Length: 180
Image 1 (cartoon, rainbow, N blue to C red):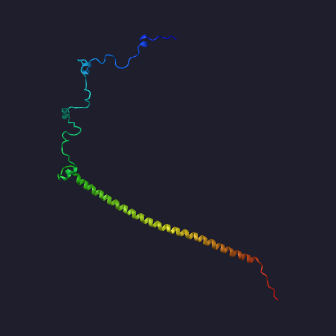
Image 2: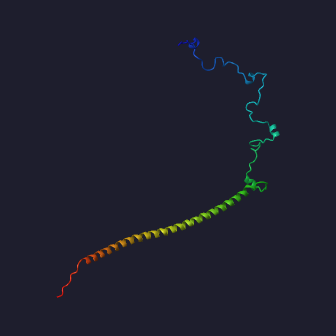
Image 3: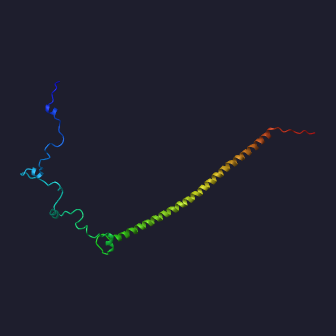
Protein backbone atom coordinates (compact mmCIF):
# COMPACT_ATOMS: atom_id res chain seq x y z
CA UNK A 1 0.00 0.00 0.00
CA UNK A 2 1.48 3.18 -1.17
CA UNK A 3 0.02 6.40 0.04
CA UNK A 4 0.04 9.33 -2.25
CA UNK A 5 0.44 12.81 -0.96
CA UNK A 6 -2.26 15.39 -1.67
CA UNK A 7 -1.36 18.32 -3.90
CA UNK A 8 -0.26 21.42 -2.01
CA UNK A 9 -2.84 23.79 -3.57
CA UNK A 10 -5.86 21.86 -2.33
CA UNK A 11 -4.38 21.45 1.10
CA UNK A 12 -3.72 25.14 1.65
CA UNK A 13 -6.65 26.95 -0.05
CA UNK A 14 -10.27 26.10 0.79
CA UNK A 15 -12.84 25.77 -2.00
CA UNK A 16 -14.75 28.94 -2.89
CA UNK A 17 -18.56 29.14 -2.83
CA UNK A 18 -20.97 31.62 -4.50
CA UNK A 19 -20.37 33.83 -7.57
CA UNK A 20 -16.88 34.22 -8.94
CA UNK A 21 -15.08 37.49 -8.17
CA UNK A 22 -15.55 40.27 -10.73
CA UNK A 23 -18.70 38.79 -12.27
CA UNK A 24 -20.80 41.61 -10.90
CA UNK A 25 -18.95 44.24 -12.90
CA UNK A 26 -19.08 42.41 -16.25
CA UNK A 27 -21.37 43.91 -18.92
CA UNK A 28 -24.61 41.99 -19.57
CA UNK A 29 -25.06 40.41 -23.01
CA UNK A 30 -28.43 39.67 -24.61
CA UNK A 31 -29.35 36.38 -26.24
CA UNK A 32 -29.54 38.01 -29.69
CA UNK A 33 -26.08 39.54 -29.35
CA UNK A 34 -24.57 36.29 -28.12
CA UNK A 35 -25.90 34.34 -31.09
CA UNK A 36 -23.70 34.41 -34.13
CA UNK A 37 -24.91 36.85 -36.82
CA UNK A 38 -24.61 34.31 -39.65
CA UNK A 39 -26.97 31.75 -38.09
CA UNK A 40 -30.74 32.21 -38.01
CA UNK A 41 -33.02 30.56 -35.52
CA UNK A 42 -35.39 28.10 -37.09
CA UNK A 43 -39.01 27.41 -36.06
CA UNK A 44 -41.44 29.53 -34.11
CA UNK A 45 -40.27 31.95 -31.49
CA UNK A 46 -40.94 30.85 -27.91
CA UNK A 47 -44.42 31.70 -26.59
CA UNK A 48 -46.16 31.52 -29.95
CA UNK A 49 -47.29 27.94 -29.58
CA UNK A 50 -50.49 27.08 -31.55
CA UNK A 51 -51.14 30.71 -32.49
CA UNK A 52 -52.33 31.60 -35.98
CA UNK A 53 -52.76 35.01 -37.49
CA UNK A 54 -56.14 36.61 -38.18
CA UNK A 55 -55.53 36.37 -41.94
CA UNK A 56 -54.76 32.67 -41.75
CA UNK A 57 -57.88 32.14 -39.65
CA UNK A 58 -60.04 33.98 -42.17
CA UNK A 59 -58.60 31.97 -45.07
CA UNK A 60 -58.97 28.58 -43.43
CA UNK A 61 -62.38 29.31 -41.95
CA UNK A 62 -61.33 28.55 -38.36
CA UNK A 63 -63.77 29.78 -35.74
CA UNK A 64 -62.64 32.13 -33.05
CA UNK A 65 -62.83 30.68 -29.56
CA UNK A 66 -64.10 32.54 -26.53
CA UNK A 67 -66.29 35.61 -26.13
CA UNK A 68 -66.99 37.46 -29.38
CA UNK A 69 -65.69 41.02 -29.53
CA UNK A 70 -68.18 43.67 -28.39
CA UNK A 71 -70.43 41.21 -26.58
CA UNK A 72 -69.49 42.62 -23.20
CA UNK A 73 -71.20 45.94 -23.91
CA UNK A 74 -74.36 44.47 -25.50
CA UNK A 75 -77.58 44.49 -23.40
CA UNK A 76 -78.35 41.12 -21.83
CA UNK A 77 -81.38 39.24 -23.16
CA UNK A 78 -82.69 36.14 -21.51
CA UNK A 79 -84.84 33.42 -23.02
CA UNK A 80 -87.76 34.62 -20.93
CA UNK A 81 -87.57 38.19 -22.30
CA UNK A 82 -87.41 36.91 -25.87
CA UNK A 83 -90.37 34.62 -25.21
CA UNK A 84 -92.41 37.44 -23.76
CA UNK A 85 -91.52 39.83 -26.59
CA UNK A 86 -93.98 37.97 -28.85
CA UNK A 87 -91.59 37.39 -31.74
CA UNK A 88 -91.94 33.98 -33.31
CA UNK A 89 -88.60 32.52 -34.36
CA UNK A 90 -87.68 29.41 -36.24
CA UNK A 91 -86.20 26.46 -34.38
CA UNK A 92 -86.84 25.96 -30.71
CA UNK A 93 -90.09 27.30 -29.25
CA UNK A 94 -89.83 30.06 -26.65
CA UNK A 95 -88.83 28.99 -23.19
CA UNK A 96 -92.05 30.15 -21.52
CA UNK A 97 -94.17 27.87 -23.72
CA UNK A 98 -91.93 24.86 -23.15
CA UNK A 99 -91.90 25.57 -19.43
CA UNK A 100 -95.71 25.65 -19.35
CA UNK A 101 -95.86 22.32 -21.21
CA UNK A 102 -93.27 20.78 -18.92
CA UNK A 103 -94.97 22.03 -15.77
CA UNK A 104 -98.31 20.66 -16.99
CA UNK A 105 -96.72 17.24 -17.51
CA UNK A 106 -95.07 17.39 -14.11
CA UNK A 107 -98.34 18.38 -12.45
CA UNK A 108 -100.12 15.47 -14.16
CA UNK A 109 -97.45 13.03 -12.98
CA UNK A 110 -97.62 14.42 -9.44
CA UNK A 111 -101.40 14.03 -9.42
CA UNK A 112 -101.12 10.39 -10.54
CA UNK A 113 -98.54 9.68 -7.87
CA UNK A 114 -100.71 11.30 -5.20
CA UNK A 115 -103.63 9.07 -6.24
CA UNK A 116 -101.42 5.98 -6.04
CA UNK A 117 -100.15 6.97 -2.61
CA UNK A 118 -103.72 7.57 -1.42
CA UNK A 119 -104.79 4.11 -2.64
CA UNK A 120 -101.79 2.48 -0.96
CA UNK A 121 -102.58 4.25 2.33
CA UNK A 122 -106.20 3.02 2.17
CA UNK A 123 -105.02 -0.56 1.57
CA UNK A 124 -102.61 -0.30 4.51
CA UNK A 125 -105.39 1.00 6.76
CA UNK A 126 -107.68 -1.90 5.80
CA UNK A 127 -104.88 -4.39 6.37
CA UNK A 128 -104.24 -2.94 9.85
CA UNK A 129 -107.92 -3.28 10.74
CA UNK A 130 -107.92 -6.93 9.57
CA UNK A 131 -104.78 -7.59 11.59
CA UNK A 132 -106.39 -6.21 14.75
CA UNK A 133 -109.42 -8.49 14.29
CA UNK A 134 -107.23 -11.54 13.74
CA UNK A 135 -105.14 -10.73 16.83
CA UNK A 136 -108.30 -10.39 18.97
CA UNK A 137 -109.55 -13.76 17.71
CA UNK A 138 -106.20 -15.37 18.45
CA UNK A 139 -106.17 -14.03 22.03
CA UNK A 140 -109.73 -15.32 22.57
CA UNK A 141 -108.78 -18.77 21.24
CA UNK A 142 -105.71 -18.98 23.46
CA UNK A 143 -107.82 -18.00 26.47
CA UNK A 144 -110.46 -20.59 25.59
CA UNK A 145 -107.88 -23.36 25.18
CA UNK A 146 -106.25 -22.61 28.52
CA UNK A 147 -109.72 -22.62 30.19
CA UNK A 148 -110.48 -25.93 28.45
CA UNK A 149 -107.27 -27.49 29.77
CA UNK A 150 -108.06 -26.41 33.32
CA UNK A 151 -111.68 -27.70 32.99
CA UNK A 152 -110.52 -31.04 31.62
CA UNK A 153 -107.96 -31.30 34.45
CA UNK A 154 -110.63 -30.64 37.11
CA UNK A 155 -113.07 -33.11 35.56
CA UNK A 156 -110.36 -35.78 35.39
CA UNK A 157 -109.55 -35.33 39.08
CA UNK A 158 -113.22 -35.62 40.06
CA UNK A 159 -113.72 -38.67 37.88
CA UNK A 160 -110.58 -40.30 39.23
CA UNK A 161 -111.59 -39.84 42.87
CA UNK A 162 -115.08 -41.22 42.12
CA UNK A 163 -113.63 -44.25 40.33
CA UNK A 164 -111.24 -44.97 43.22
CA UNK A 165 -114.13 -44.83 45.70
CA UNK A 166 -116.07 -47.34 43.64
CA UNK A 167 -113.09 -49.69 43.57
CA UNK A 168 -112.71 -49.48 47.33
CA UNK A 169 -116.38 -50.29 47.82
CA UNK A 170 -116.15 -53.38 45.60
CA UNK A 171 -113.11 -54.61 47.45
CA UNK A 172 -114.89 -54.65 50.81
CA UNK A 173 -117.00 -57.71 51.44
CA UNK A 174 -120.57 -57.21 52.48
CA UNK A 175 -121.81 -58.68 55.70
CA UNK A 176 -124.91 -60.79 55.43
CA UNK A 177 -127.63 -60.45 57.91
CA UNK A 178 -128.74 -63.47 59.70
CA UNK A 179 -132.40 -64.44 59.82
CA UNK A 180 -133.80 -64.91 63.12
